[in-house]
Length: 252
View 1: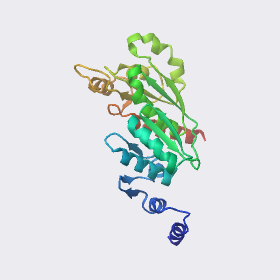
View 2: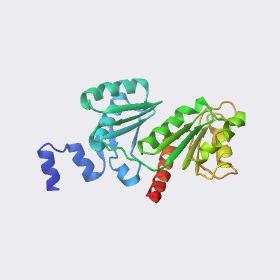
View 3: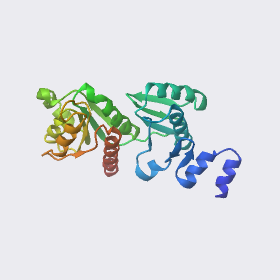
View 4: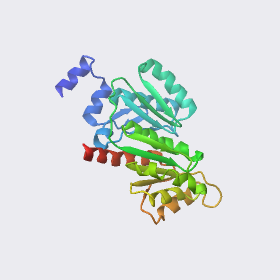
């Protein structure tokens, strides 16, 4: 404790960093940031930008960078992203921003990117499903997994799926995103011996639209797969990361 206080006093440790070490989380005007989640769970806390003000998003991102040297933000709007990028030019000018769809990863030079000896295959049925898959993509890439992205192979033209079977079988874990009736994860799971995570997408319409039919179809799958909630790209990515980490540990 004394060393911690002395570090704060001499400026080598900020109050937020000290709080993160003592409590595992940091409290500020924007809420609480779980700085210890990666050490505890293997997956960092993501900052859900949707529903938050621009100021809250910026504050939480800066807190994440200060305490963990990286920040992961999901469902960020263009306005939120522009303001964040502008603010970080002053508060963290050496930080690197990477954006994929509505998901953003930020890290400082002090961050040591992890590496996993495991490949996550991320598959989409159509272009409309790619935004949700992007969220899972960034989560897995942030964890250090190798990503093999296979887009637009929906079952409306089954040859597109069958053409990619050998490639899909090489992955250690698969995330398969699909809307409409959600058939693609079921088909893929029947063709591979790899764990498959079904990711239903709210890309359908009419009866059973907004992902309801896709979710129900995946839950009723006669092939073995696990299923996350509608549009839950972060959860799918997190689950795939845990599997990839276990595979990496077994190989090493």
